[in-house]
Length: 198
Image (cartoon, rainbow, N blue to C red; front, side):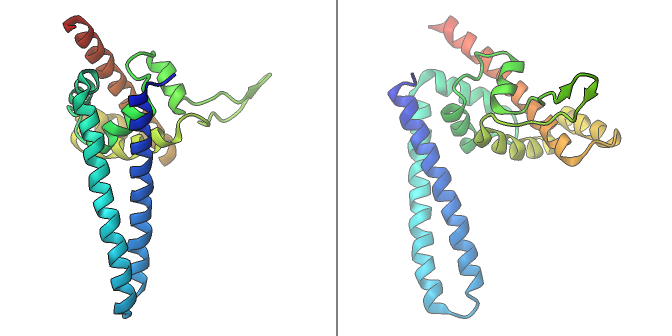
């Protein structure tokens, strides 16, 4: 069972995601109120409240990670990858505590980034991803696209897939999986270093 700290971190990360979604909705509402200053002021109050809550939640999440030596070590090594910021670190800690413990193949399957065979007899069906942890998968899609701007090996990998005529979604999945495997390897090394130091 997850520890109390793990449960609290997951609750904080979940709430931060909800607040972020609400903030997006309120900003869209405000943009639709072209000349109604009274209603804009009302929405502005809600936006200000949500921003305060977001900052508070981010601070609590960062404090929890900094206060745990292993979590802090993992966060430090993940941040070596350009594009991986505080929110990504929080999501990985909260929603993927198995990272660095499972094999690359197992962690990809757990997140839902391992294409599942759809074969029957001689028929070879199209392989697709399904199931897994959608929250982690969605943030990996975003971070992998950002990381590919700075990391030449990821950029080259993406360019090879584009040159091979792969579909956009296939490329997104492949990039996210490659990033996950890299983060898993870093987590494995960080866990080993932490275990040897304690």
